[in-house]
Amino acid sequence: MSPLRIILVGLGARAQFWMRVIRENPDCTIVGLIDPSDEARTRALAQWPEAAASADLDLITTVDADFVLLATPPGGRERQMELACKAGIAILAEKPLADSVELAARYVEMAEDAGVPLAVGLNFRFLPVTQETLRLFDETVGAPEFGRFTYERWRDGWRPNFNKYPLTMDQPMLWEQSIHHFDLMRYVYRSEPVSVFGSTFNPSWSMYRDDANVSALIRFANGVEVNYQGLWQSNWQKPGFQWRSECRNGVVVQNDQFGELNYALHADSELTPVTLPPYEQWINDAKSLLAAFVAAMRGTADLPCTGRDHLNSLRMVQACILSSQQGQAINPADLDTNAKREIGHSTHHSALQQRTSQ
Ligand SMILES: NC(=O)c1ccc[n+]([C@@H]2O[C@H](COP(=O)([O-])OP(=O)(O)OC[C@H]3O[C@@H](n4cnc5c(N)ncnc54)[C@H](O)[C@@H]3O)[C@@H](O)[C@H]2O)c1
Image (cartoon, rainbow, N blue to C red; front, side, top):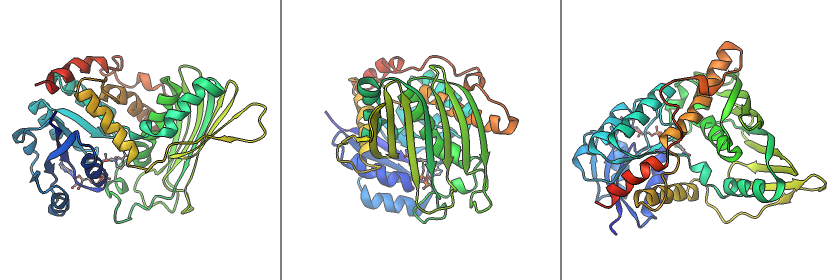
């Protein structure tokens, strides 16, 4: 079977990881590279000289491809989405799909109307630590009832190898980082949020124009309650992370965003560490995500991380912003009207099979 042909759009920081991940997947190849920056295109072409490169998004409709991988900033993807839908090729878009729920919902509908599969790059779902957490809930400590999620970081937004748009965007922590955390909560607690009471703020030392820190109390439909603190502007260079879930028979404690998983049963005096497979952060998670997307394209699995499912995580972000402005809890499900249909994997399945068997 010939490799799936990818047009990589946006050749900045994140694309560097994708180029390696794609190179190491024999089922994929890059046929197109798009970025308005000459420097970014030159750097990417040095790694993929066989690909067509352009500053112009029209390449999406002129090069034969199986899917576009959008590694562009989340704001301003309208034309990228329109052209992929026009070309009838699948879309794997980096998170967040857009910088507003309304726009993201429009993209989801646009892709569904065009019969184009749309998935979002939620790589943290694919971490061994995430999968093991689910197993612990099922087999060892029982169902989770409440949790505390703490992510503390002084993120140097001026670091040369970091993207720069978060420095000036609205609510950078929520759209860029908390979106992963909220998605993970929905994924491992296997429930949708019914209430978000949030507060966003920016400390005096912040280099970000808008709020880089978030606190929230989140309640899920199955009763799970989470205390969340997400900081891009803590005031210590050393990062901190802890996600502790209190369950029927004990606790699960994750001490690093990529690993360090432990559990304890109620009467245990110490935590028991969980052995995780060897792991290269940012690489293995993206590899597994890509493999899952390829399986869907080949018709052997459902589409992972659908755009429609992602809307529920984006609504949590929006609810947090509104809650902070209004000083009251918000139910994310009340936020918009046109994107509430059930999470759709299987609807994409036959369209994918059709496309990949062509
Ligand atoms: N899943 C993850 O763990 C993860 C990690 C980092 C970044 N990301 C996401 O990846 C995306 C890109 O982030 P980044 O760090 O690479 O940003 P970046 O600013 O480093 O790179 C973005 C690139 O897109 C290009 N670009 C801008 N507008 C474009 C357009 N209309 N058409 C084509 N190219 C365009 C820019 O010139 C730039 O080279 C964001 O959505 C970000 O949230 C995801």
